[in-house]
Length: 85
Image 1 (cartoon, rainbow, N blue to C red):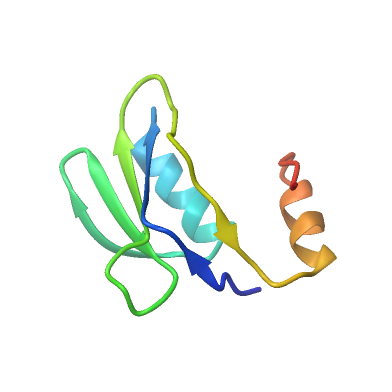
Image 2 (image 1 turned 180 degrees about the vertical axis):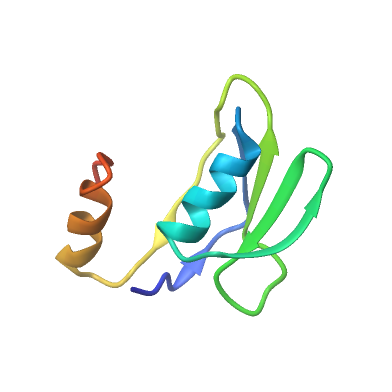
């Protein structure tokens, strides 16, 4: 499954390592860099489209993923308890 485009977004996560695992294993992003308290992930040739910051509470201003129009995405992330819209 392919993500077509991830906009440049930043998210806070309580557990940085768990956040990195989730985005790599579930969405297939590549870890492109890491600093103390932050991780940079990408789905294309850019250095990063997603930055995870260790912080509490976990929150975001906004984010979105462009994916092919297919029920496969809804079924895949639904199997992890995530609702697609």
